Image (cartoon, rainbow, N blue to C red; front, top):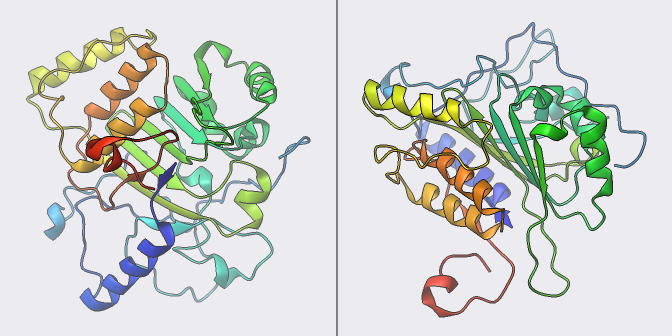
Length: 316
């Protein structure tokens, strides 16, 4: 499973802010939610279960939306500096308990226009998820990687939503007895970049509304290429958008920019997706520049690992 050590990172990050007076630690930040932005309603459970750093030029906002929750108090506290770490909103607690970087709605991170979404989780209540994050339904392709033992309800929800033609449901292999698939993340492709969201909540109503859950996310821009290569690559992507076997990325895009990218690619391989879907996901990741990643990816996969290379590839 992917582990971002969310709670450790929260302590380290805020301690760093205290010592360095909130000096930016990345070129990529997100802005705050405007005061007149109405919080989406994700309180209804389903009927079943469940720049350059010195300036502002390099700040990336993939959606055109702000993501921090607004405050409704007459004398709001100072907003915290941009952070990659948040806690999801918890229902039924005082307002101060949901002040930034707390009180984040999952739907703030899943806003249109989204091209492609890979959703990974142990438990997924799609009926509830689509009601809480309806913008997901507008994505051009959706992939759900899950650990459900009885996934019939996933297929039923996809059919009810009318998106069977653009949705893939996949259960990763579990080569050892009593194994479970617990990775909780979203990969969201936008026209100008890729949003990576790693969190601790099962995608069911109780987990996302009634429990304290950590969220790490960051937006990553497209890799820099000359305009000719970029236009050509975009044309190829559009031509093969609905194809299960997209063309390989150009050499300009195929250069790894960080250990984060390499680790993410390696983890995608371990999911045991159908080969065309594995290639497509690799290609999408390869389009983006992860050199500004503000975290290290520590992934675990089930199975037996032998040899120094395999032992050093995964967390234990």
